[in-house]
Image 1: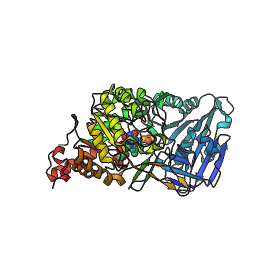
Image 2: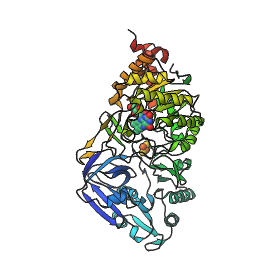
Image 3: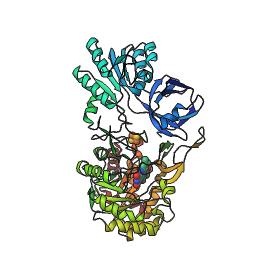
Image 4: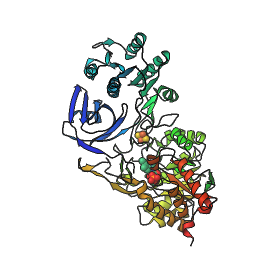
Amino acid sequence: MKDSPMVTMKAARAVQENPSVKTLYFDYGLGARPGQFVMLWLPGVGERPMSISYCTRERFGVSVADVGGFSSAVMKVKEGDAVGFRGPFGTSFKLGKEKAIALVSGGCGCAPLAFLADEALAKGKKAFYLQGARSKGMLFFTERMRKAGAEVLVSTDDGSAGKKGFVTELLREVLQKNKVDKICTCGPEIMMKKVVDISNEFKLPCDISMERYMKCGIGICGQCCVDPLGIRMCTEGPVIKKETAKKITEFGKYRRDASGRRVPI
Amino acid sequence: MLQTELAGVKLANPTILASGIMGVSGASLSLIAKNGAGAVTSKSISLEPRKGHPNPVIVTYGQGMMNAVGLSNAGVKDSIPELEYAVKNAGVPVIASAVEFKAENFGALTKEISKANPALIELNISCPNVSHEFGKPFSHDPAAAEWVTRSAKRNTKIPIFVKLSPNTPDLLEVAHAVKSAGADGITAINTVGPGMQIDIFARRPVLSNKCGGVSGPAIKPVAVKCIYDIYKETKLPIIGTGGVTTGADAVEFIMAGASAVAMGTGIYYRGLDIFAKVCKEMQEFMEKEGFSSIKEMRGVAHEG
Ligand SMILES: Cc1cc2nc3c(=O)[nH]c(=O)nc-3n(C[C@H](O)[C@H](O)[C@H](O)COP(=O)(O)O)c2cc1C
Ligand code: FES
Protein backbone atom coordinates (compact mmCIF):
# COMPACT_ATOMS: atom_id res chain seq x y z
CA MET A 1 0.00 0.00 0.00
CA LYS A 2 1.12 3.55 -0.77
CA ASP A 3 3.08 5.08 2.08
CA SER A 4 5.13 8.25 2.65
CA PRO A 5 6.92 7.34 5.86
CA MET A 6 8.98 9.65 7.99
CA VAL A 7 12.64 8.82 7.33
CA THR A 8 14.88 9.88 10.19
CA MET A 9 18.64 9.84 9.86
CA LYS A 10 21.78 11.70 10.84
CA ALA A 11 22.54 14.81 8.81
CA ALA A 12 25.67 13.91 6.82
CA ARG A 13 26.78 17.53 6.45
CA ALA A 14 25.57 20.89 7.69
CA VAL A 15 26.99 23.78 5.68
CA GLN A 16 26.58 27.44 6.63
CA GLU A 17 26.16 29.05 3.19
CA ASN A 18 26.07 32.60 4.54
CA PRO A 19 25.20 34.14 7.94
CA SER A 20 21.52 33.26 7.53
CA VAL A 21 21.32 30.20 5.27
CA LYS A 22 22.21 26.63 6.10
CA THR A 23 22.20 23.55 3.87
CA LEU A 24 21.62 20.14 5.42
CA TYR A 25 22.78 17.13 3.43
CA PHE A 26 21.54 13.57 3.87
CA ASP A 27 23.11 10.39 2.50
CA TYR A 28 19.89 9.09 1.03
CA GLY A 29 18.76 8.36 -2.50
CA LEU A 30 15.67 10.54 -2.54
CA GLY A 31 15.14 10.35 -6.29
CA ALA A 32 13.65 13.84 -6.40
CA ARG A 33 13.09 16.06 -9.42
CA PRO A 34 13.94 19.79 -9.38
CA GLY A 35 11.18 21.86 -7.79
CA GLN A 36 9.95 19.09 -5.50
CA PHE A 37 10.09 19.43 -1.73
CA VAL A 38 10.36 17.38 1.45
CA MET A 39 8.60 17.93 4.75
CA LEU A 40 11.61 18.46 7.00
CA TRP A 41 11.17 17.39 10.62
CA LEU A 42 13.27 18.58 13.52
CA PRO A 43 12.20 16.25 16.31
CA GLY A 44 10.77 18.27 19.16
CA VAL A 45 10.70 21.47 17.09
CA GLY A 46 8.38 21.06 14.13
CA GLU A 47 8.03 20.22 10.46
CA ARG A 48 8.07 22.50 7.40
CA PRO A 49 8.12 22.08 3.61
CA MET A 50 11.60 22.71 2.17
CA SER A 51 12.50 22.62 -1.49
CA ILE A 52 15.33 20.37 -2.46
CA SER A 53 18.46 22.32 -3.40
CA TYR A 54 20.74 19.44 -4.30
CA CYS A 55 20.11 15.85 -5.33
CA THR A 56 22.26 13.06 -6.68
CA ARG A 57 21.80 9.31 -6.68
CA GLU A 58 23.08 8.97 -3.13
CA ARG A 59 22.73 12.37 -1.48
CA PHE A 60 20.32 15.29 -1.25
CA GLY A 61 20.25 18.67 0.45
CA VAL A 62 17.80 21.33 1.60
CA SER A 63 18.74 24.94 2.16
CA VAL A 64 17.00 26.85 4.91
CA ALA A 65 17.00 30.61 5.45
CA ASP A 66 16.74 31.89 9.01
CA VAL A 67 13.42 33.68 9.25
CA GLY A 68 12.77 32.83 12.88
CA GLY A 69 10.92 29.96 14.56
CA PHE A 70 11.53 26.59 12.94
CA SER A 71 14.18 27.93 10.59
CA SER A 72 16.20 29.38 13.48
CA ALA A 73 16.26 25.90 15.00
CA VAL A 74 17.64 24.55 11.71
CA MET A 75 20.61 26.96 12.08
CA LYS A 76 21.62 25.01 15.19
CA VAL A 77 21.57 21.58 13.52
CA LYS A 78 25.02 19.93 13.42
CA GLU A 79 26.42 17.03 11.43
CA GLY A 80 25.24 13.82 13.04
CA ASP A 81 22.02 15.24 14.49
CA ALA A 82 18.91 13.16 13.81
CA VAL A 83 16.58 14.90 11.35
CA GLY A 84 13.49 13.49 9.66
CA PHE A 85 11.96 13.99 6.25
CA ARG A 86 8.95 12.83 4.25
CA GLY A 87 8.93 13.08 0.50
CA PRO A 88 9.76 13.98 -2.19
CA PHE A 89 6.40 15.62 -2.87
CA GLY A 90 4.85 17.88 -5.50
CA THR A 91 5.40 18.75 -9.12
CA SER A 92 8.71 19.65 -10.73
CA PHE A 93 10.13 22.01 -13.35
CA LYS A 94 9.90 20.32 -16.74
CA LEU A 95 12.73 20.41 -19.22
CA GLY A 96 12.31 19.39 -22.83
CA LYS A 97 14.20 20.31 -25.96
CA GLU A 98 15.23 23.81 -24.82
CA LYS A 99 18.78 24.79 -25.71
CA ALA A 100 18.96 27.62 -23.18
CA ILE A 101 16.93 28.38 -20.08
CA ALA A 102 16.79 31.33 -17.70
CA LEU A 103 16.37 30.62 -13.99
CA VAL A 104 15.19 33.65 -12.06
CA SER A 105 15.17 33.69 -8.27
CA GLY A 106 14.66 36.05 -5.41
CA GLY A 107 15.92 35.26 -1.91
CA CYS A 108 15.81 31.58 -1.02
CA GLY A 109 14.12 30.78 -4.33
CA CYS A 110 17.57 30.13 -5.75
CA ALA A 111 17.67 26.80 -3.87
CA PRO A 112 15.42 24.68 -6.13
CA LEU A 113 16.73 26.52 -9.20
CA ALA A 114 20.29 25.44 -8.35
CA PHE A 115 19.14 21.83 -8.45
CA LEU A 116 17.36 22.56 -11.73
CA ALA A 117 20.50 24.20 -13.15
CA ASP A 118 22.52 21.08 -12.28
CA GLU A 119 20.09 18.99 -14.26
CA ALA A 120 19.90 21.39 -17.22
CA LEU A 121 23.69 21.62 -17.45
CA ALA A 122 24.05 17.84 -17.24
CA LYS A 123 21.71 17.63 -20.24
CA GLY A 124 23.95 20.04 -22.16
CA LYS A 125 21.68 23.07 -21.96
CA LYS A 126 22.87 26.59 -21.38
CA ALA A 127 21.62 27.95 -18.06
CA PHE A 128 21.37 31.63 -17.12
CA TYR A 129 21.19 31.70 -13.34
CA LEU A 130 19.79 35.07 -12.30
CA GLN A 131 19.78 35.66 -8.62
CA GLY A 132 18.29 38.60 -6.71
CA ALA A 133 19.03 39.25 -3.05
CA ARG A 134 18.72 42.07 -0.58
CA SER A 135 22.49 42.37 -0.21
CA LYS A 136 25.77 40.57 -0.85
CA GLY A 137 25.67 38.70 2.46
CA MET A 138 22.35 37.09 1.57
CA LEU A 139 23.60 35.46 -1.63
CA PHE A 140 24.42 31.75 -1.75
CA PHE A 141 25.11 29.05 -4.34
CA THR A 142 26.60 31.70 -6.65
CA GLU A 143 30.02 29.97 -6.61
CA ARG A 144 28.48 26.49 -6.89
CA MET A 145 26.58 27.58 -10.00
CA ARG A 146 29.63 29.26 -11.58
CA LYS A 147 31.67 26.12 -11.06
CA ALA A 148 28.89 23.99 -12.50
CA GLY A 149 29.04 26.06 -15.68
CA ALA A 150 26.00 28.29 -15.40
CA GLU A 151 26.10 31.91 -16.51
CA VAL A 152 25.55 33.64 -13.17
CA LEU A 153 24.11 37.14 -12.94
CA VAL A 154 23.41 38.81 -9.63
CA SER A 155 21.36 41.78 -8.48
CA THR A 156 21.08 43.25 -5.00
CA ASP A 157 18.71 45.82 -3.56
CA ASP A 158 21.60 47.83 -2.11
CA GLY A 159 24.11 47.31 -4.90
CA SER A 160 26.61 45.51 -2.63
CA ALA A 161 27.00 42.80 -5.27
CA GLY A 162 26.15 42.65 -8.95
CA LYS A 163 23.65 45.07 -10.37
CA LYS A 164 21.78 47.39 -8.03
CA GLY A 165 18.07 46.86 -8.57
CA PHE A 166 15.66 44.10 -9.44
CA VAL A 167 16.52 40.70 -10.82
CA THR A 168 13.71 41.17 -13.35
CA GLU A 169 15.79 43.90 -15.01
CA LEU A 170 18.62 41.40 -15.41
CA LEU A 171 16.17 38.99 -16.98
CA ARG A 172 15.07 41.58 -19.54
CA GLU A 173 18.71 42.25 -20.48
CA VAL A 174 19.48 38.55 -20.84
CA LEU A 175 16.45 38.00 -23.05
CA GLN A 176 17.33 40.98 -25.24
CA LYS A 177 20.88 39.72 -25.82
CA ASN A 178 20.41 35.95 -25.95
CA LYS A 179 18.16 33.31 -27.36
CA VAL A 180 16.41 31.70 -24.41
CA ASP A 181 13.74 29.00 -24.79
CA LYS A 182 12.19 28.82 -21.34
CA ILE A 183 12.05 30.65 -18.01
CA CYS A 184 11.74 29.04 -14.58
CA THR A 185 11.23 31.18 -11.50
CA CYS A 186 11.01 30.86 -7.73
CA GLY A 187 10.83 33.65 -5.16
CA PRO A 188 8.48 36.33 -3.86
CA GLU A 189 5.18 36.32 -5.75
CA ILE A 190 5.46 39.99 -6.67
CA MET A 191 8.75 39.19 -8.41
CA MET A 192 7.35 36.09 -10.11
CA LYS A 193 4.40 38.11 -11.39
CA LYS A 194 6.84 40.47 -13.04
CA VAL A 195 8.78 37.52 -14.48
CA VAL A 196 5.56 36.17 -15.97
CA ASP A 197 4.85 39.58 -17.53
CA ILE A 198 8.29 39.60 -19.13
CA SER A 199 7.86 36.01 -20.38
CA ASN A 200 4.63 37.14 -22.06
CA GLU A 201 6.42 40.04 -23.70
CA PHE A 202 9.06 37.68 -25.11
CA LYS A 203 6.48 34.94 -25.80
CA LEU A 204 8.37 32.36 -23.76
CA PRO A 205 7.05 29.46 -21.69
CA CYS A 206 7.45 30.02 -17.97
CA ASP A 207 7.17 27.71 -14.93
CA ILE A 208 6.74 29.22 -11.49
CA SER A 209 7.00 27.73 -8.01
CA MET A 210 4.14 28.80 -5.79
CA GLU A 211 4.23 27.99 -2.11
CA ARG A 212 1.32 27.87 0.32
CA TYR A 213 0.97 26.99 4.00
CA MET A 214 1.32 23.23 4.21
CA LYS A 215 0.32 20.78 6.87
CA CYS A 216 0.26 17.29 5.37
CA GLY A 217 2.26 17.70 2.15
CA ILE A 218 0.40 14.72 0.68
CA GLY A 219 -2.80 16.21 -0.65
CA ILE A 220 -5.12 15.41 2.22
CA CYS A 221 -5.61 18.37 4.55
CA GLY A 222 -6.57 20.94 1.91
CA GLN A 223 -4.62 23.70 3.64
CA CYS A 224 -2.62 24.57 0.52
CA CYS A 225 -5.54 24.84 -1.93
CA VAL A 226 -5.69 28.01 -4.02
CA ASP A 227 -8.63 30.07 -5.25
CA PRO A 228 -10.61 29.66 -7.38
CA LEU A 229 -9.27 26.38 -8.83
CA GLY A 230 -9.11 24.59 -5.50
CA ILE A 231 -5.95 22.72 -6.58
CA ARG A 232 -3.34 21.72 -3.97
CA MET A 233 0.05 23.40 -4.08
CA CYS A 234 1.60 20.35 -2.38
CA THR A 235 0.38 18.02 -5.12
CA GLU A 236 -0.71 19.88 -8.28
CA GLY A 237 2.04 22.39 -7.31
CA PRO A 238 4.33 23.86 -6.16
CA VAL A 239 5.59 24.11 -9.76
CA ILE A 240 2.88 25.27 -12.13
CA LYS A 241 2.83 26.68 -15.64
CA LYS A 242 2.23 30.39 -15.99
CA GLU A 243 -1.08 29.60 -17.71
CA THR A 244 -2.25 27.94 -14.48
CA ALA A 245 -0.90 30.78 -12.36
CA LYS A 246 -2.94 33.19 -14.45
CA LYS A 247 -6.11 31.38 -13.40
CA ILE A 248 -5.17 31.55 -9.72
CA THR A 249 -6.70 34.83 -8.62
CA GLU A 250 -4.96 34.79 -5.22
CA PHE A 251 -1.50 34.65 -6.84
CA GLY A 252 0.42 37.67 -5.59
CA LYS A 253 -2.58 38.80 -3.53
CA TYR A 254 -3.31 36.56 -0.55
CA ARG A 255 -2.62 33.20 1.01
CA ARG A 256 -4.15 31.19 3.84
CA ASP A 257 -2.68 30.88 7.34
CA ALA A 258 -2.64 27.84 9.66
CA SER A 259 -6.31 28.30 10.49
CA GLY A 260 -7.33 28.77 6.86
CA ARG A 261 -8.02 32.50 7.10
CA ARG A 262 -6.92 34.66 4.18
CA VAL A 263 -3.95 36.93 4.79
CA PRO A 264 -2.67 39.48 2.26
CA ILE A 265 0.74 38.85 0.69
CA MET B 1 -29.07 3.67 -10.28
CA LEU B 2 -26.71 5.35 -7.81
CA GLN B 3 -29.12 8.02 -6.51
CA THR B 4 -29.65 8.14 -2.80
CA GLU B 5 -31.29 10.30 -0.19
CA LEU B 6 -30.30 11.65 3.21
CA ALA B 7 -33.15 13.06 5.29
CA GLY B 8 -34.89 14.40 2.19
CA VAL B 9 -31.69 15.66 0.54
CA LYS B 10 -31.19 14.00 -2.84
CA LEU B 11 -27.71 12.91 -3.94
CA ALA B 12 -26.90 11.88 -7.51
CA ASN B 13 -24.56 9.25 -6.12
CA PRO B 14 -23.70 8.00 -2.64
CA THR B 15 -20.05 9.11 -2.47
CA ILE B 16 -19.33 12.04 -0.15
CA LEU B 17 -16.18 13.92 0.78
CA ALA B 18 -15.56 13.30 4.52
CA SER B 19 -14.99 16.24 6.83
CA GLY B 20 -11.46 17.49 7.37
CA ILE B 21 -10.07 16.34 4.05
CA MET B 22 -9.73 18.98 1.30
CA GLY B 23 -12.55 20.98 2.88
CA VAL B 24 -10.80 24.21 3.83
CA SER B 25 -12.19 26.42 1.07
CA GLY B 26 -15.23 26.79 -1.13
CA ALA B 27 -12.95 26.30 -4.12
CA SER B 28 -11.52 23.00 -2.89
CA LEU B 29 -15.00 21.68 -2.05
CA SER B 30 -16.13 22.58 -5.57
CA LEU B 31 -13.11 20.82 -7.05
CA ILE B 32 -14.08 17.61 -5.21
CA ALA B 33 -17.61 17.89 -6.59
CA LYS B 34 -16.07 18.09 -10.09
CA ASN B 35 -14.28 14.85 -9.31
CA GLY B 36 -17.55 13.03 -8.94
CA ALA B 37 -18.61 13.33 -5.29
CA GLY B 38 -22.37 13.21 -4.70
CA ALA B 39 -21.98 15.65 -1.78
CA VAL B 40 -19.12 17.43 -0.05
CA THR B 41 -18.49 18.06 3.66
CA SER B 42 -16.56 21.07 4.92
CA LYS B 43 -13.76 20.94 7.43
CA SER B 44 -15.27 21.19 10.93
CA ILE B 45 -16.06 24.82 11.73
CA SER B 46 -15.98 26.32 15.24
CA LEU B 47 -17.14 29.71 16.52
CA GLU B 48 -13.59 31.03 16.87
CA PRO B 49 -10.64 30.47 14.49
CA ARG B 50 -8.23 27.68 15.47
CA LYS B 51 -4.67 27.20 14.25
CA GLY B 52 -4.69 23.52 15.16
CA HIS B 53 -1.70 21.55 16.40
CA PRO B 54 1.84 22.34 15.21
CA ASN B 55 3.36 20.15 12.46
CA PRO B 56 3.85 17.22 12.09
CA VAL B 57 0.10 16.65 12.12
CA ILE B 58 -0.13 13.74 9.71
CA VAL B 59 1.82 10.55 9.35
CA THR B 60 1.13 7.54 7.15
CA TYR B 61 1.93 3.92 7.93
CA GLY B 62 1.35 0.56 6.25
CA GLN B 63 -2.45 0.43 6.32
CA GLY B 64 -3.52 3.96 6.99
CA MET B 65 -2.85 7.33 8.42
CA MET B 66 -2.82 9.11 11.75
CA ASN B 67 -3.77 12.74 12.05
CA ALA B 68 -3.79 15.32 14.77
CA VAL B 69 -4.63 18.36 12.70
CA GLY B 70 -6.37 19.65 15.81
CA LEU B 71 -9.55 21.00 14.20
CA SER B 72 -7.88 24.01 12.62
CA ASN B 73 -10.39 26.25 10.89
CA ALA B 74 -10.94 29.88 10.04
CA GLY B 75 -13.80 30.29 12.52
CA VAL B 76 -17.44 30.64 11.62
CA LYS B 77 -17.25 34.26 10.45
CA ASP B 78 -14.59 33.62 7.79
CA SER B 79 -16.01 30.18 6.95
CA ILE B 80 -19.47 31.42 5.95
CA PRO B 81 -18.26 32.94 2.64
CA GLU B 82 -16.41 29.69 1.85
CA LEU B 83 -19.56 27.66 2.51
CA GLU B 84 -21.65 30.09 0.47
CA TYR B 85 -19.19 29.79 -2.41
CA ALA B 86 -19.50 25.99 -2.27
CA VAL B 87 -23.30 26.08 -2.02
CA LYS B 88 -23.37 28.31 -5.10
CA ASN B 89 -20.64 26.63 -7.17
CA ALA B 90 -20.22 22.98 -6.18
CA GLY B 91 -23.39 21.84 -7.89
CA VAL B 92 -23.93 19.11 -5.28
CA PRO B 93 -25.33 19.26 -1.73
CA VAL B 94 -22.92 20.83 0.76
CA ILE B 95 -22.67 19.46 4.27
CA ALA B 96 -21.35 21.89 6.86
CA SER B 97 -19.45 20.25 9.70
CA ALA B 98 -19.73 21.99 13.07
CA VAL B 99 -17.51 21.48 16.10
CA GLU B 100 -17.51 23.12 19.52
CA PHE B 101 -15.89 22.38 22.81
CA LYS B 102 -18.57 23.62 25.17
CA ALA B 103 -21.97 21.97 24.80
CA GLU B 104 -23.75 25.32 25.22
CA ASN B 105 -22.01 26.72 22.10
CA PHE B 106 -23.53 24.27 19.62
CA GLY B 107 -26.82 26.18 19.42
CA ALA B 108 -25.22 29.49 18.48
CA LEU B 109 -22.85 27.79 16.05
CA THR B 110 -25.65 25.91 14.29
CA LYS B 111 -27.59 29.13 13.95
CA GLU B 112 -24.61 30.95 12.40
CA ILE B 113 -23.73 28.12 9.99
CA SER B 114 -27.34 27.91 8.83
CA LYS B 115 -26.94 31.39 7.32
CA ALA B 116 -24.84 29.82 4.54
CA ASN B 117 -27.76 27.50 3.80
CA PRO B 118 -25.95 24.14 3.56
CA ALA B 119 -28.05 21.10 2.66
CA LEU B 120 -27.14 19.34 5.91
CA ILE B 121 -25.28 20.17 9.10
CA GLU B 122 -23.05 17.51 10.62
CA LEU B 123 -22.22 17.86 14.30
CA ASN B 124 -18.71 16.62 14.96
CA ILE B 125 -18.95 15.52 18.58
CA SER B 126 -16.33 12.84 18.22
CA CYS B 127 -12.87 14.16 17.43
CA PRO B 128 -10.37 12.03 19.37
CA ASN B 129 -7.27 14.16 19.06
CA VAL B 130 -8.14 17.22 21.11
CA SER B 131 -9.45 15.42 24.19
CA HIS B 132 -6.53 16.47 26.38
CA GLU B 133 -7.56 20.05 25.59
CA PHE B 134 -11.24 19.61 26.26
CA GLY B 135 -11.97 16.47 28.27
CA LYS B 136 -13.83 13.52 26.83
CA PRO B 137 -15.75 13.99 23.58
CA PHE B 138 -19.56 14.42 23.82
CA SER B 139 -19.85 11.28 21.72
CA HIS B 140 -18.67 9.27 24.72
CA ASP B 141 -21.54 10.46 26.90
CA PRO B 142 -25.18 9.77 25.86
CA ALA B 143 -26.59 12.62 27.96
CA ALA B 144 -24.15 15.18 26.55
CA ALA B 145 -24.69 13.93 22.98
CA GLU B 146 -28.44 14.24 23.44
CA TRP B 147 -28.17 17.75 24.87
CA VAL B 148 -25.91 18.98 22.06
CA THR B 149 -28.16 17.50 19.36
CA ARG B 150 -31.26 19.03 20.90
CA SER B 151 -29.75 22.50 21.09
CA ALA B 152 -28.58 22.29 17.48
CA LYS B 153 -32.03 21.13 16.35
CA ARG B 154 -33.67 24.03 18.16
CA ASN B 155 -31.53 26.51 16.26
CA THR B 156 -32.02 25.45 12.68
CA LYS B 157 -34.48 24.05 10.15
CA ILE B 158 -31.67 22.30 8.26
CA PRO B 159 -31.44 18.52 8.84
CA ILE B 160 -28.86 17.54 11.46
CA PHE B 161 -26.52 14.56 11.21
CA VAL B 162 -24.46 13.67 14.26
CA LYS B 163 -21.00 12.20 13.74
CA LEU B 164 -20.19 9.45 16.21
CA SER B 165 -17.01 7.98 17.54
CA PRO B 166 -16.17 4.28 17.53
CA ASN B 167 -14.01 4.80 20.59
CA THR B 168 -16.69 4.26 23.21
CA PRO B 169 -18.37 1.12 24.50
CA ASP B 170 -21.61 3.16 24.65
CA LEU B 171 -21.89 3.76 20.88
CA LEU B 172 -25.44 2.42 20.65
CA GLU B 173 -26.65 4.31 23.70
CA VAL B 174 -25.25 7.46 22.15
CA ALA B 175 -26.94 6.63 18.84
CA HIS B 176 -30.25 6.21 20.65
CA ALA B 177 -29.72 9.43 22.57
CA VAL B 178 -29.13 11.54 19.46
CA LYS B 179 -32.10 9.91 17.73
CA SER B 180 -34.40 10.78 20.61
CA ALA B 181 -33.05 14.32 20.51
CA GLY B 182 -34.28 14.56 16.93
CA ALA B 183 -31.15 13.84 14.87
CA ASP B 184 -32.08 13.34 11.22
CA GLY B 185 -29.19 10.98 10.63
CA ILE B 186 -25.86 9.67 11.87
CA THR B 187 -22.39 9.79 10.39
CA ALA B 188 -20.16 6.93 11.48
CA ILE B 189 -17.33 6.72 12.13
CA ASN B 190 -14.82 9.37 13.07
CA THR B 191 -11.20 8.28 13.43
CA VAL B 192 -10.21 5.37 15.66
CA GLY B 193 -7.92 5.43 18.65
CA PRO B 194 -6.11 7.69 18.98
CA GLY B 195 -2.97 5.87 17.94
CA MET B 196 0.72 6.68 18.18
CA GLN B 197 3.81 6.22 16.05
CA ILE B 198 7.24 6.43 17.67
CA ASP B 199 10.21 7.21 15.47
CA ILE B 200 12.89 4.87 16.72
CA PHE B 201 15.78 7.01 15.49
CA ALA B 202 14.40 10.24 16.91
CA ARG B 203 13.25 8.22 19.93
CA ARG B 204 9.97 10.07 20.29
CA PRO B 205 6.44 10.19 18.85
CA VAL B 206 6.31 11.68 15.35
CA LEU B 207 3.14 13.73 15.77
CA SER B 208 3.65 16.93 17.74
CA ASN B 209 0.43 16.07 19.54
CA LYS B 210 2.06 12.67 20.26
CA CYS B 211 -1.09 10.80 19.20
CA GLY B 212 -3.64 11.10 16.41
CA GLY B 213 -6.85 9.61 15.06
CA VAL B 214 -6.38 6.55 12.85
CA SER B 215 -8.06 6.53 9.42
CA GLY B 216 -7.79 4.62 6.18
CA PRO B 217 -8.11 0.92 5.24
CA ALA B 218 -6.97 -0.25 8.69
CA ILE B 219 -10.19 0.97 10.32
CA LYS B 220 -12.68 -0.31 7.73
CA PRO B 221 -13.85 -3.39 9.66
CA VAL B 222 -14.52 -1.23 12.72
CA ALA B 223 -16.61 1.13 10.59
CA VAL B 224 -18.63 -1.73 9.05
CA LYS B 225 -19.52 -3.08 12.49
CA CYS B 226 -20.54 0.33 13.81
CA ILE B 227 -22.72 1.02 10.75
CA TYR B 228 -24.30 -2.43 11.03
CA ASP B 229 -25.15 -1.92 14.70
CA ILE B 230 -26.42 1.65 14.34
CA TYR B 231 -28.65 0.67 11.42
CA LYS B 232 -30.12 -2.21 13.37
CA GLU B 233 -30.78 -0.07 16.43
CA THR B 234 -31.98 3.22 14.94
CA LYS B 235 -32.89 2.79 11.24
CA LEU B 236 -31.77 6.42 10.79
CA PRO B 237 -30.08 7.44 7.53
CA ILE B 238 -26.34 6.79 7.92
CA ILE B 239 -23.32 8.32 6.21
CA GLY B 240 -20.84 5.47 6.48
CA THR B 241 -17.22 6.59 6.84
CA GLY B 242 -13.92 4.92 7.56
CA GLY B 243 -11.38 3.32 5.28
CA VAL B 244 -13.34 3.17 2.03
CA THR B 245 -11.13 3.11 -1.04
CA THR B 246 -13.05 0.98 -3.57
CA GLY B 247 -16.53 0.40 -4.92
CA ALA B 248 -16.55 -2.95 -3.12
CA ASP B 249 -15.88 -1.17 0.19
CA ALA B 250 -18.72 1.25 -0.51
CA VAL B 251 -21.11 -1.59 -1.34
CA GLU B 252 -20.12 -3.29 1.91
CA PHE B 253 -21.06 -0.13 3.83
CA ILE B 254 -24.42 0.12 2.05
CA MET B 255 -25.17 -3.52 2.78
CA ALA B 256 -24.36 -2.85 6.43
CA GLY B 257 -26.96 -0.08 6.44
CA ALA B 258 -25.39 3.12 5.15
CA SER B 259 -27.35 5.34 2.75
CA ALA B 260 -24.20 7.10 1.57
CA VAL B 261 -20.46 6.63 1.95
CA ALA B 262 -17.94 9.34 2.85
CA MET B 263 -14.27 9.09 1.93
CA GLY B 264 -11.30 11.04 3.16
CA THR B 265 -8.03 9.16 3.45
CA GLY B 266 -8.87 7.29 0.25
CA ILE B 267 -7.89 10.41 -1.69
CA TYR B 268 -4.30 9.74 -0.67
CA TYR B 269 -4.43 6.26 -2.18
CA ARG B 270 -6.45 6.86 -5.34
CA GLY B 271 -6.41 10.60 -6.04
CA LEU B 272 -9.08 13.29 -6.09
CA ASP B 273 -11.13 11.33 -8.61
CA ILE B 274 -11.64 8.45 -6.17
CA PHE B 275 -15.30 9.53 -6.12
CA ALA B 276 -15.84 8.92 -9.83
CA LYS B 277 -13.82 5.70 -9.64
CA VAL B 278 -15.81 4.31 -6.70
CA CYS B 279 -19.10 5.20 -8.43
CA LYS B 280 -18.05 3.34 -11.55
CA GLU B 281 -17.02 0.29 -9.53
CA MET B 282 -20.29 0.32 -7.56
CA GLN B 283 -22.31 0.52 -10.72
CA GLU B 284 -20.42 -2.39 -12.28
CA PHE B 285 -21.03 -4.47 -9.19
CA MET B 286 -24.72 -3.61 -9.06
CA GLU B 287 -25.24 -4.45 -12.72
CA LYS B 288 -23.51 -7.80 -12.29
CA GLU B 289 -25.34 -8.67 -9.10
CA GLY B 290 -28.74 -7.44 -10.26
CA PHE B 291 -29.26 -4.50 -7.92
CA SER B 292 -31.18 -1.62 -9.45
CA SER B 293 -30.88 0.94 -6.65
CA ILE B 294 -28.94 1.87 -3.54
CA LYS B 295 -32.17 1.57 -1.58
CA GLU B 296 -32.54 -2.04 -2.65
CA MET B 297 -29.02 -2.81 -1.48
CA ARG B 298 -29.19 -0.92 1.78
CA GLY B 299 -29.06 -3.14 4.85
CA VAL B 300 -29.30 -6.44 2.95
CA ALA B 301 -26.64 -7.90 5.21
CA HIS B 302 -29.26 -7.89 7.97
CA GLU B 303 -31.65 -10.18 6.11
CA GLY B 304 -31.38 -13.88 6.50
C1 LIG C 1 -6.52 14.80 8.01
C2 LIG C 1 -7.86 14.48 8.58
C3 LIG C 1 -8.62 15.50 9.14
C4 LIG C 1 -9.87 15.24 9.67
N1 LIG C 1 -10.61 16.26 10.18
C5 LIG C 1 -11.88 16.04 10.58
C6 LIG C 1 -12.72 17.12 11.00
O1 LIG C 1 -12.33 18.29 11.00
N2 LIG C 1 -13.99 16.82 11.37
C7 LIG C 1 -14.49 15.56 11.36
O2 LIG C 1 -15.66 15.37 11.69
N3 LIG C 1 -13.72 14.51 10.97
C8 LIG C 1 -12.44 14.73 10.58
N4 LIG C 1 -11.67 13.67 10.14
C9 LIG C 1 -12.23 12.31 10.14
C10 LIG C 1 -12.79 11.93 8.77
O3 LIG C 1 -13.88 12.76 8.40
C11 LIG C 1 -13.27 10.48 8.72
O4 LIG C 1 -14.31 10.32 9.66
C12 LIG C 1 -12.15 9.48 9.04
O5 LIG C 1 -10.94 9.91 8.52
C13 LIG C 1 -12.44 8.10 8.52
O6 LIG C 1 -12.64 8.07 7.13
P1 LIG C 1 -11.46 7.77 6.05
O7 LIG C 1 -10.79 6.51 6.45
O8 LIG C 1 -12.19 7.69 4.74
O9 LIG C 1 -10.56 8.95 6.10
C14 LIG C 1 -10.39 13.91 9.64
C15 LIG C 1 -9.61 12.89 9.07
C16 LIG C 1 -8.37 13.15 8.54
C17 LIG C 1 -7.58 12.03 7.94
S1 FES D 1 -0.55 20.48 2.58
FE1 FES D 1 -2.24 19.23 2.97
S2 FES D 1 -3.26 19.21 1.06
FE2 FES D 1 -1.45 20.29 0.65
